[in-house]
Image 1 (spheres, protein in one colour):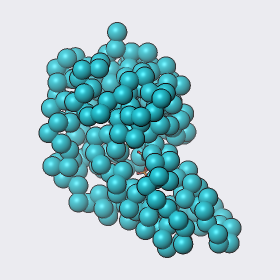
Image 2 (tube, rainbow, N blue to C red; image 1 turned 180 degrees about the vertical axis):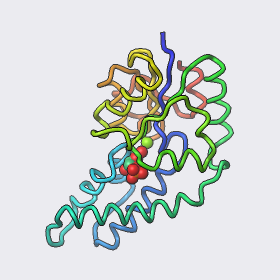
Image 3 (tube, rainbow, N blue to C red; image 1 turned 45 degrees about the vertical axis):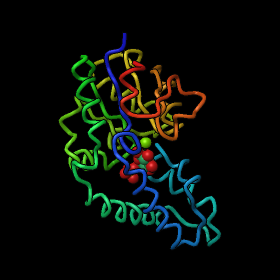
Length: 211
Ligand code: BG6
Ligand code: MG
């Protein structure tokens, strides 16, 4: 029997995936690198530095060293964090809020499992910090998805076994991570068409009828 649900943040609870896209797009334009929504889908769930490597696959300039790469990642993060300043509680839909409430009412323990180092800032801005019993994010992991690390930590923080948890994800690598960790992966958004997802939902509230 399942007792916990671990939610990815970007692209599942909030649409910060659009801000990630716009911030990377700005950096890519400055570097003269082609970037579009399809490439952006490959960045879902992937750490900041790994995302930069994907952007740089199309970079034609002089080879960049680690210091320069860190500076580029830092620059993207500054653009992104400026965008995050606009976030308000209204950026979380009534559907998401009531669904989380219903899941808590049904007795599920809820956690965040996000690759982002900005997760707590976002949760605070949209007033969702209190909705979760545990937060596992980019600040407590060494390997990003598809490694199951972030979800295994979330289960541990909830004091549950991985097998007792569902994971809700919009990233294909996130579904891979959930399965690698022995959890049930529920695909939403970009992952709603992923053949490896154990379950697929077309809207957030549909979670209530599949679990
Ligand atoms: C994930 C996003 O949640 O966090 C990725 O899906 C992002 O696109 C990753 O790269 C890391 O985010 P941050 O905020 O630490 O740069
Ligand atoms: Mg995501």
